Image (cartoon, rainbow, N blue to C red; front, top):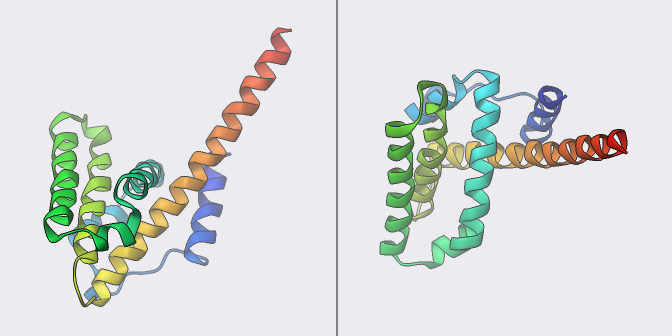
Length: 158
């Protein structure tokens, strides 16, 4: 069920199928993300979604980050890079893909600080947005599914 929902969310968010990257739009981090197997890609999307929620709540999202000083933006980027490094140091090999989430958010924040944006910057923003939105849909569906399972368990127990 979650796998079908993931595929549906991916189609809705991307407008149909995942785009084939153009060579000039490929960043090593984006290549790593695209190379993930579907299960890890879904897990990464959920993690990016949680990071995005925190980015909006604590920093004020895109507008908030742009309104902050260069030092504050650099501090956020360092925080994300440090988080990614901690994941790499402490996660099992099966969970190492979670480090790509804070790496992506750091890269995205770096692009927001630029006065002019390249096509690669736009692609980075698109990937971050797609992952955050897809992850939010999967998390929402998971909460609904868990609530139904809990309700079914309560009725069966009664």
